[in-house]
Image (cartoon, rainbow, N blue to C red):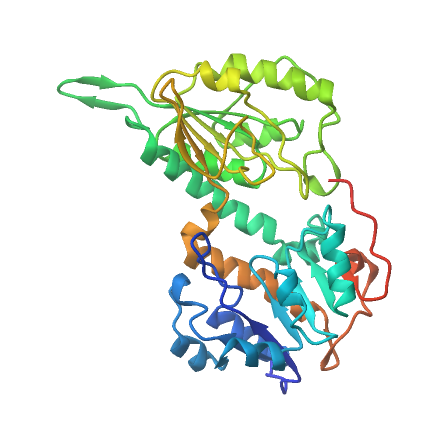
Amino acid sequence: MAETQEATVSFGVLNETSEHESRVALTPDIVARLRKAGVSCLIERGAGLAAQYTDDDYTKAGASVLPADEVIAKADALGFVDRPSTELLGRLKPGTWVIGMLGSFTDAEYVAALDKAGLVGVAMEKLPRQLSSAQSMDEMTSQNSVMGYKAALVAANAYGSFFPMMTTAAGTIRPAKVLILGAGIAGLQAIGTARRLGAVVTAYDVRPASRGEVESLGAKFLDLGLDFSAGQGEGGYARALTPEEQAAQQAAVDQKAAGFDVIITTAKVPGRKPPVLLTKAGVDGLKRGAVIVDCAASDLGGNVEGSTVGTSVTDGGVTIIGAPYLASDVSNTAANLLARNVGDVLAHFVKDGRLSIDLNEELDDALIVAGRPAAAPAQA
């Protein structure tokens, strides 16, 4: 067992509990893990309660439970579930490290606010997920896995019949036909969960490599008769389609969607507006009682035309659930995974008892350092 180093770096986490957020960026297990790396942990009172961790749990693990202002004043680095507001950035002392999903691909004003406040940002969305050394830091993968799992359960709960085939004395009930649009991390988890619930699952993704992944889980791959052979971008993400490609995809999906009872959409392009995969015409073509779960719904829009955060029912009786917060609904597991991601990022930058930006170049693009020009956004 590795010896515990004397703590010389202070890591703080604040309470981010809200109507839609139950996760926390630090768990007791990670407190103990970070102590071995020479990091002491500070956490705001009550921050872990929604994820089923009490203040006493943190104290027993060796963390200091403090009011928010004391956490901010004492921490060398702060970890976040959602990025801190610009108002909070202004309250942090210069030189503080801010670790989280910072939206750095598209929000230049936010990056400028970090710079103005003299902070060091670690934008987790820019971590190179294809590197084995960075995989334990990949928040998008861990949280999307939880989201995909929960999306299938939410869809099953909203659907007015069984997912599996049921043979009863009153007759046989056919299994639900489920279509997953987007076969990335969330989509694959949704496929696996829907299959385990007994549904007949079909999936589609623009990336050529996804066909084998879909079929390996026992699902069918939806053939739209289109060729987007260059559909995969860097880092394993789907690239944004051209307007012509997107229009062709939408028309084909709209036509095919009518044969399904449940549709789950999970397609996101990091830092950009989600692609519309199912148009209003496609929604209107679904049978009454059909359910759509749009995991990409946000203020920027979603994968389903007209979807918003929350639940709505169309005039044709189709239920649309805009659900970007599904990972938070599995708060304990999601927090455990997220805390490991954030903790491993922090530990990577602890060098000789201090936080250091002098590291190998493979993770350097994730750093937003005050006074240093930001790296150009990576191709999604």
